[in-house]
Length: 409
Image (cartoon, rainbow, N blue to C red):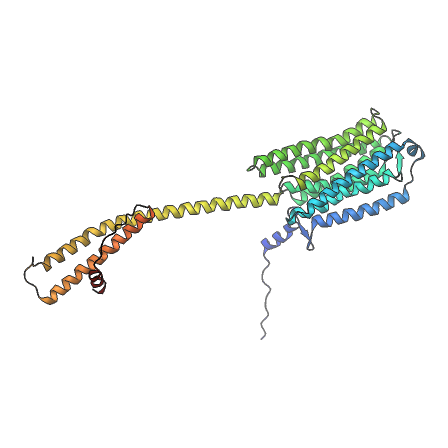
């Protein structure tokens, strides 16, 4: 009969481990052989291009909104475009000189964060960006919301590299950030009371997003407690992140209340937009802040060094104990050996009466063997003294005939 091979049982641990690979740390997680961070960056660029095309083709600028724009406002947009271009160029130079694979992949996210504002502000500087009038009668730059829709989740993704936050938690925070931008846009154009509903949803989601970002940085501080300078850098990054991110909805609220003019509102948005994005890229690519993998490798190296030092100390202690043991045993062996040699000398000197030549040769052999053993014991003691630099060499004449006779016997 033909034997049928039964399939081996499935390893549940291996299945769980395979399932968790997708939800591993975000920057090193893979899907279909590709890094998730790379897939997300490419999808963001393509999504922005598609959204930009639909936005330019379907939305027409409001006549009252276009009249508010002046040449100085367009020059202001052009200045921001140059600033973002310079920042991205510096990031590109830093990426060229980055040898580490994990940190070099960060440039794809930086390309989304600093690259999309270049396109946005260029279109706005030419005066072709679609403009609307919000419920407060102020111009609404729709193109900025499109840029925020793709850049702010990428910024959250980039912040996640400083800690071991899971992909599930990161994905949830990014989804909420999408809701923040969408609901913030509808809060500007929806009629009362729907504008308040959208505003409430946006603020609640924004609170959770800020809590997640703060937790990421705090985890990075807790995991990098070995290096105090690294912790100080992360504390500074935490303060910078909190101030710049919270300032954006604050500017929206101040502008909605009519406390600032439209040019001042745009200037504040531009400064905060550049500060949050370029500041983040500088913090990640150009500073000494380490990614979670770098901190893991550093901690592993420290543990290996500590274990290596403990092993060396244990070996040195074992060598010392071995030398002490050999020295004690050697001293105990020399006493009976010297007694045997003395008894043999006495027998050969006739202390036991006259003996035959054959017995004399046997006794002489016992004496020579005892002397040889005693010489070996002395060599052990000399070796122990040599390790402690306590061995003293004595130069003296040697009778070669006696040495040769000792070796032959």
